[in-house]
Amino acid sequence: MTIRYLPKFKKQYKKLPLKMQTQFDDRVQLFVVDPTQPKLKVHPLKGKFAGYWSMSVSGDIRALYIIEGDTIVIFALIGTHSQLYG
Image (cartoon, one colour):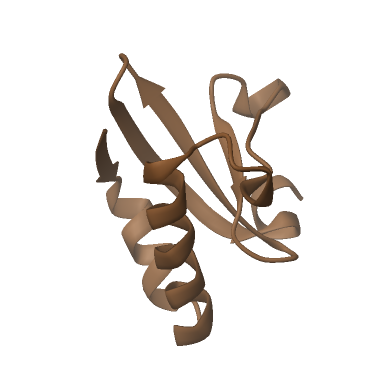
């Protein structure tokens, strides 16, 4: 599996507290091993984010990504539920 990050994602990631950055890094490692791990709460999105998938980083932090082909995951956005969907 190849993981890529869009520039907007990188900018949002850098603004997160170090604790959240570390938590995201841990979740990505778990995601690479088993994307269906229940702890990640992965699910497809609808509406304006149709085509995106959401992964839980912490209680309120979500990372949105796109699946390209069979092996490429592109992380597009990261932030709180209200920042992303509100």
